[in-house]
Image (cartoon, rainbow over all chains, first blue to last red; front, side, top):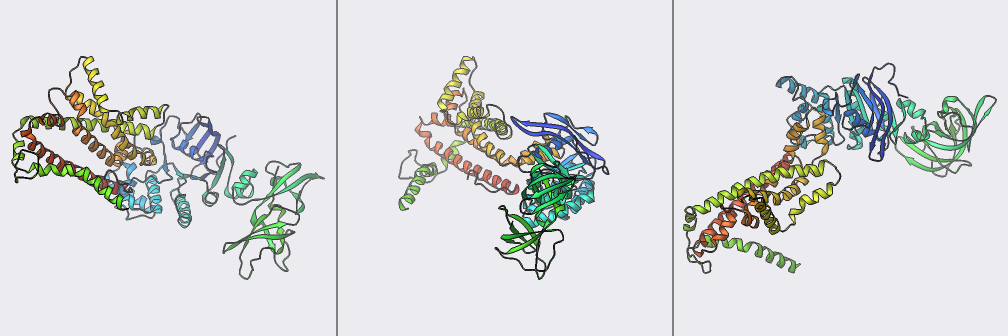
Length: 368
Length: 266
């Protein structure tokens, strides 16, 4: 079944049953996916899941065994990378070290019908767009990592591709620079309106930047959704575990008078809805998952907004704005993680403190 | 520590002292190569101008060395690209066979080539020396170019292709400029090897000897020895000049390409 582009977007890329082997290794196992016009789409997964292979397939660098790649209504079968309306930003940026910044940016314009002056103007405009105006005459090898990244973007965007492909573009940058570039990339994408397809193994990066994310494991798309849906309603335990932090506790499920009841070890019984069970309601043994921020420590005099359970604080990890607590509910051996904002006047609790924990039945996800 | 230092100094003396003797006797007035020196003269250098056989030998050597160097470097580019850019069955074995002449005794190469040429009913000449020299220079060229190609990020070529270039124009606009220092090195090393190669040239040269072969034949005439010394001096100076120029080019190229200087040959 093909994962469709959102109804409000015109589909630009359509991948049909893409299969790819590297010798014995089955790299892509039947990818069926549509990506919409102007979408910021991410391929997210651990290394070796096939996300880069899929990106390179769209770019035209990989020969697939079977399946089809349609781009703007045209079959890309037999169309090599240099003839496709896609451009790529490589992980190593691949800035030509023997050329100046301007020569790098104008590299792809050689065969364009523009005049020399127009080409130089286009290159300068592209540099301006990525915040590097006036850098044209610099030697490319003298640039910093962040600047190389911007040159790579300008070089690809100057050709006005239908799709910009980004292969782990931020992984070589330090944390501060990376976070800054994430915001800039989002702004840039909105400005140019071109479809961006980003490959990343960093779930946070994917959540921050994307309109839609496809999570891939072992050459298959496990789930494709908006960041919020992906985070709140992961379809499988594996996706839940891969995106952010997810606590898991064992539970048993039963029907009772038309109601769906789950009995969680240490937390007790609660009713759940159909949509909290992405894999269907599991009769009998099950696992419930919940995010750290859906748990709250109740301080003196606070009343729970939902349900309450006693626990012991096992570990405290202080992050400045946040504190992560690993707590054990009474009668449960596995610790669960919860996060608290360090609001002004609120004390950070110590290891060994007993605490009342508020939890929300509506935030649970139940897996078979 | 002290023994190591002594060893290093002795090693260098042993290596370079004979070369310093060349200019010493080239400017000496006596025709006998022996101490004490008898006086300063430049007559051996002017004598060189009159030995026309030597001129034709030198010209012949230059012709052979330039041709072999260009051929070996072109083959070297093909070989290095095959070994670093592609993967095919039997790749290691094939590369091994290509590199084999590096350790094969030259006398074997020379004799077997001679046998083949004679059996084919062909006559030896400059072309057969060029063939032999290309054969022994190619592995050196491949070794040098291999490291040049291996240091080149394959994404650079992919990026150029992605930006609309063809395979051929990618090679011209990106690959070639970036491996140019390697190509210059390969050309120079091959030229140097061919220029002073003796055994293959001795077996395969026809009526026109190369410079080393000619010099060897001249050793039978003691009168000509100081002139040989003078020629040697000129060659040493030229070699140093050539290598220095090559090194300057290599460093400039590496700097322009923003690569870390890994030392090269000097």
